[in-house]
Every structure is written in structure tokens, then in C-alpha cells.
Image (cartoon, rainbow, N blue to C red; front, side, top):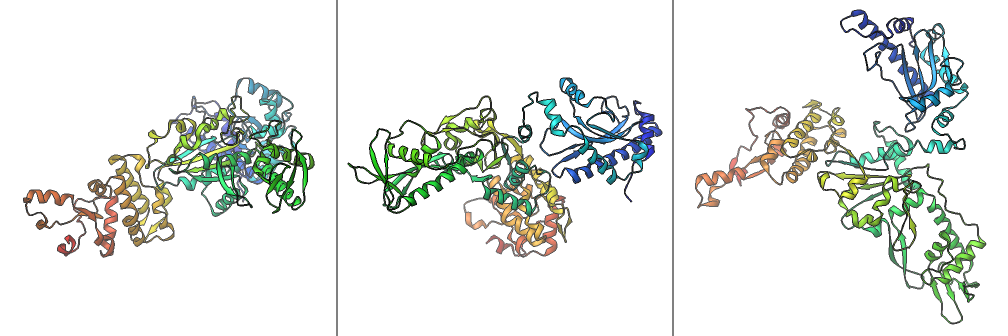
Length: 634
């Protein structure tokens, strides 16, 4: 049977309202526990409403029966429900119980005072059943309803409110009565920073988490939710749609790849052509303002035009009145012929540029391209660039952002990605691109997510221009990801404990930027075997530690709990006949190597003890070695 609120909750609210809680008073303790029960039920009530009516919503409740200040008992419990994750946090639907009143559903402001609260109270009027945005159910009626029935009552009350959530928000925060609902909602989508970098040691899931962050931006996915195969499918679909672009920076990556550059190609006449091609960044900026759809439409128009004039001449005139003939022998390329010249190839990109940005000025001696563009504009229905897609976010993911030369890749456009310099903002900037001579600005609905391996380059040495324009989100190793790995010989939590202890040592011996990421151990989720764990240590962890500590084997040994995975090897004194025994002994301490015996031939019990030694080192632990030390030395 579904849980219900009890009359005693209202009795306690009424009896203790405004009284300071006395920790030594058993009656106060009892009242506190009862009111916590009421708070839990209020939370469940809100969760049911969220599930039924606000699938993409977010509900929360701070279940504390006393005020933060003064430690006095409240006379109510309440939970807030935001219709959509990422919307404003200043206004919410609320549900709860109040002493001597009953069950309440309303639209209410959150943590607001002054003029905003006054505007709200003008709309709400009296805080009772006569308010256009408040609904009340008596105590007797409410305690006889299940939580499901209370949720249904709240949902119906919300539907019956005189003003919707959007209308209340508009009336409070927007004085302009002409503000449209779409504009209102667009002001609520910018929950996440426009420019952010996920940074941390190798293997902490930075690239993996870009999927979570991208979906959080595009569809309000909860960042705390575990990633599923369905999420990865959504991510791929968004990439196919062009809503997400992914690029990896490297030392050879440049402005021409990222923004735009001149590319050499051949036409049907085997002539070299030099066209300006957009890079990844310009392409997604164009998509974000709807320009790419226009360009695709123009490409179709140009292809159709070339096919139409195939072996059929079209007479046109330049701006100065000179007649010329347009033709296409192949049905793909466009050429012109005049009375004084042979056939000239005309770049489709030049024609497209005039269509996209009409001008009466002839650029770069392209009189023929200008005339053809004019003809197509007058004779065909070509789409116009739109900018009303600003409420639809786009995401550019830059993996390994610190591996590229930022000045070389972004050039003068690094300024344009700043929040305040984005198109549509008060301080918006527009620059002219050097190759195409086109004006360019960065739309404010484009989000940039970078990843950076902090063990590859410390955060302090990152390009200052980059650091100033991005928010940095640290991604540290998460041992809890490995807590359910159950290796029979070690038990649950052993792997997560091993990672946690090793990283504590690394932080002391080196720094936090060189911790070992949990991703190195995630193969154990599919194959939780001791052999697999030993393989990970031999082939992945020890080589990583060699790189981190520059082959300082003493420190590597300390990180591993001196468990014998690396060890000093016997040294043949005949190799250095002129050295005395003390010198030989000194060299012997430097003669480190991986203990192949432990990883390959050692009995199972010895391997188990070596792994346990990482977590709980023992003074009397003996380093596992081959019985034949001569063979080991050789």
C-alpha cells in the first residue's frame, strides 16, 4: 500500500514552529525525526510529479526541519520542481505541507527578495486558494490520499493555474510584454560555460566524459548519470546531424585545418584550381547560425545550373555590359567564352561567395562570377542565411587541446570565442578572414569542450590566451568506478584500494597531475581475473611509472609498495674487474628491472601477496625471486 502523510506531522509542525531545537530534549529529537519523515514523503511526492509531467525536469529538497540560522523549527516542508534541467533556478513549482493549512502546490520564487519578490507577490496575490498560482488541499483530504493521488492533484492544479510557469517568469524578469516564449526559454539554456576544458591525468575519462558534457548541453542530460550505450548512440547521431564536431589537436595542426585555407584541386579540364575551403571551426559556426544549410542549397543550385547549360550556351553580360557565353562541356564545371578569349574556368566557390554575400563591388577580377551569381539570384529561389537557430546549441569537442599550437591554430580568432565577444552580445566582434575576405564572428550557441592531459603538460604552462578564455574542470581518478570488480583471490574493492593507495604515494613523490587514471583498470570490469590484473601492471602501469619518474626505479618501487614487481638484479662482478667491492655494491643498487618471474612463473599465492603488499605493506615481506639467481643475473 502506498505511503501517506500522517496527522502527527501537522501536529508537530504546529507545536514546534519557531522553537529553537534543544539537542538534549528527547521531545525535540522525536519531533525532528517525525518531520524528517514528512520531508522524505514530500521529496517522493515531488519525484512522482517530475516523472509524470516533467520528464526532463529536476526536483530537489533539503530535508532539514530547522532553519539554517537560529536552529529553529520550521512550520512547513517543501520540495521544488524545475520543469526542465538547465532552466532558471529563480522560479520553480513547489509542493509541501504547512502547519494549520494543509497540502500546498504553487509556483514560487527561489531565494529571491527585493523588487523580484515584489513583482512575484503582485502576481500571486494572497498566499491562499484565491491566488491564480496557488492550490491548497485540506489536511483531512490530503492525509487520506496516497502519494500517487497527491501527485495527480498537484498536476491537475498546475494545469488549472491562471498563469503558466513561462508567463510568470516573463512577468517577473521581463518587463517587455513583446518577449516571446521562445526568447524566454532561450535565456535559460546557457547553464553550462561556453568554453570549458576537462583536464586531469591520463586515464581519468576526459574524452569519455565529453559525451556526457555534450549531451548535457544538447538535451539536459544529468552529468551525474552513468553513461550508457544509448547515450553513445545519441552522441553519434548528433555527430551525423552536424550538431557535434570532434577534432584532435596535434603539433602539425594549423589555421588552415581549423578555420580556413586555400586548397589545390583539379577541374575536369585537368587545370589546377585554388579554392578557399572552410575548416572544422568555421563549418560548425556556419551550422550554428543556419548558414551551412544555405551553402548546401547553393551547391545544389550550382550543380543543377551546370547540368542545365551542358552543351547549351547561355548569354550573359558583365556589370560593364560586356557580353559573354556561359557553358559546361562536362555538365559539372562552369566555363565562359568571350569574343576575345578562349574558354575560362569559373570557380563555383567564387559564384557561391557572391550569392552568400551579395555585393556591387567586383572582388579579385571575378566579373564573370559576379554576373552568374546575379543571374542565379534572379532566376532561382535560393535560401537566405538565417540566425534564428540560436536557441539550438552546437558543440565542438577539441581533444588534446594543449598539444596544438594555439596561436597557430586560432590566430586572430582566439578573441572571438570569449563569451562577451560572441555574436549577438553587446561587445560582439566581427573580423575579416584573410583568405576569403569574409566577415566572421562566433555564435553564442556554440559550446567548446576541450580535453587536456595534465601529466603531458602542467596547467600552469598552458597558453595564457587559452587559460583566460576557458573554465577548467578537473577530472581526477575515480576509484569508485572499480569498486564492484570482484577478483576471486583478492575480493571486492581490492582493485579500487590498490589504485587509491598508489595515487596517494604518487601525490607525495611527484604531484597530483601524474596520478594513475581508473581507465587503466576498467578492462577488469569485463574480465575480473588475477592474470588480467597482473598483465595490466606489467604492460601498462609499470611503463607509465617509468615515464612519470624518468626511470627512477627507487620511487617506482615505493609506489608499488616495494612488492617486488620491480627489483634490483644481481651484478656479475667480472664485468667491472677494476672496481672494488663497495663500488660494485653501489652499481648493484642501480641495476633495476621488471621482475619477470613474478609476472610469468611465480605461483598464484605469491602474485596475490604481491598485490596485497601494495595496499598493506608488511615489514617482513620477501621479494619474490627465481631460485636460480645466476640465471636471473644473466
